[in-house]
Image 1 (cartoon, rainbow, N blue to C red):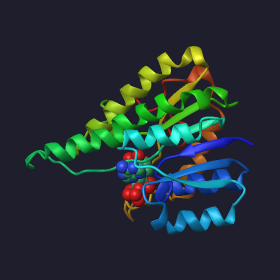
Image 2 (cartoon, rainbow, N blue to C red):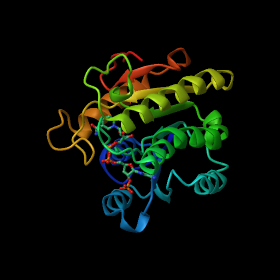
Image 3 (cartoon, helix red, strand yellow):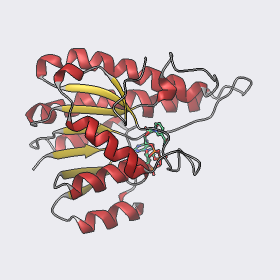
Image 4 (cartoon, rainbow, N blue to C red):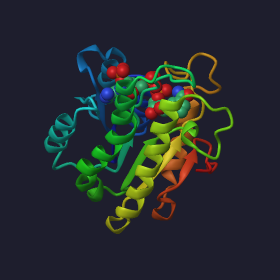
Length: 230
Ligand code: NDP
């Protein structure tokens, strides 16, 4: 049975990843900040009791990441999905909230690296050996034609660089690391006017993930398989 570890699995894109991988027969380590309050995830886990286990994880808490890696030390993980993310608004004339900016970096940029560091041994034992980080086209410098969103854009551009370095550094271990753009998706973050459902986004991204090889490591790919310019 293949295994995926998914952060931010209690709602939105992460919950849909958990649903689709479990339905496809995968083992899912579903991580959420507040397991007791994660009703949708707990209901899903009850539907797939052999496959889904729910784990407490705030990705901003490095001690918690270390504890989780320790508790899963003997597992094989085929796919690490760094999905948890936050959008913090900041436009040209806004007061710059340094704390909010640092917090966005902690969650969107630093956490994926810490997760990769702590779970690389389990991933190296898996058959698929993939680390997938959900970034955003808003982190593409080449694609930025509308400005604004300083905090979110910079935190995602920075995680793109984190993953590019990981792709190089983990190649000898046979681990593929990529960033994916999920599309504009109807979630709490994407809002009701977004273009696609979580089901469409996740089935597209699963198709991309299924076909990844080591030669793809370091790429920035959209849910529909198109390459995104850096
Ligand atoms: P949602 O806002 O619906 O969900 C965000 C998820 O991240 C929640 O599960 C949330 O948990 C979790 N999360 C936030 N902070 C932390 C933390 N400190 N520790 C652990 N988990 C945390 O967003 P989406 O599902 O839409 O987004 C998923 C990913 O896709 C994000 O990385 C986002 O940037 C990216 N993305 C989304 C797009 C869209 O259109 N929706 C477009 C481009 C990229 P909790 O419930 O506890 O807050």
